[in-house]
Image 1 (cartoon, rainbow, N blue to C red):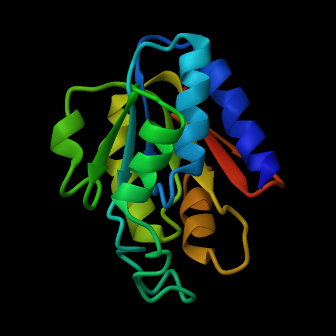
Image 2 (cartoon, rainbow, N blue to C red):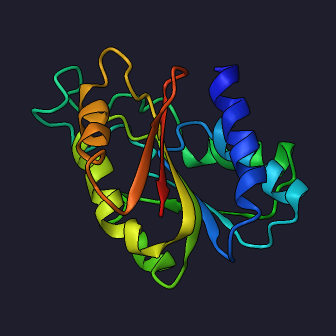
Length: 186
């Protein structure tokens, strides 16, 4: 929706202030928010690439924490659809698409990167946990993690995973009413 998109737009602007680091989105679907973030990164002069990671086969790792997911939801996409939007329609050249399960199948392509912003739109608990387990030490000081679908009915796993981070002393967890939760590395 427009509120979450506007928030991502403004967060890209804000994270320009952070030390050198890339931007990553895991859970791209058809590329809309990835395109929005890439365009704003370009506008802000952020020289680092934006990595867009997706299986393009739908949701993976649905489990007991995610009663409304069975797996493969949101499979009505393809890498070609995303490339068409980013490269042919918008002519964005600051993106790299990583196809496969993140982090297991594609993180080796970004293993030496640091990140200033990570947008997680994977819909299920275990995927979000695996991403954070891999990326947290690679986030720069002040780096921002954005969880999509926080607090949404049917996205119980994401909400539960975010709530489990509240007591952690190395992060601030902010809850928005728009369906995002923000975690800032301190």
